[in-house]
Length: 201
Image (cartoon, rainbow, N blue to C red; front, side):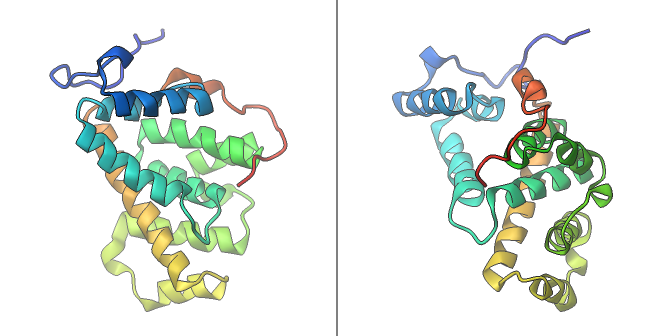
């Protein structure tokens, strides 16, 4: 039975409407609606405080959309695999949809959500995701051999920084989303469920 629409479980932290947010936040919401067809619930959750929203979106946009040796798809793959380890429902739904859209392969999206080790990954992708998992499960055990394994498949030291940064960011967002009971927008569930040409990564 469908649950009633909600953004998160904290009744004492307001989720504003479009009419209640600041002018700057309203413009950001409008841009999201224009590009995505929705305002992600994570943005609604942070919109009770413009400073918190700005901090979150600045980091997210730089890591996930900024210049990098990692493609957008690779960064989304990291987001999904880290979220799978952490069992973060919000991020698995939202970023699983992004993987499906960017890859054009709904099966890949499902494999990464469930168990990335069953996916037909390139050596580069496998090394990247193995490192992201180690960042998530046992970052204190990372040593030079782990970084060398990434260099061996073509990643630069700057790329390694970006892999670590994306993995670390989603470990934070996973914990925040789970802690406050954040729920993904229902629209994500239906996105890119049939094979299609991959989106530009």
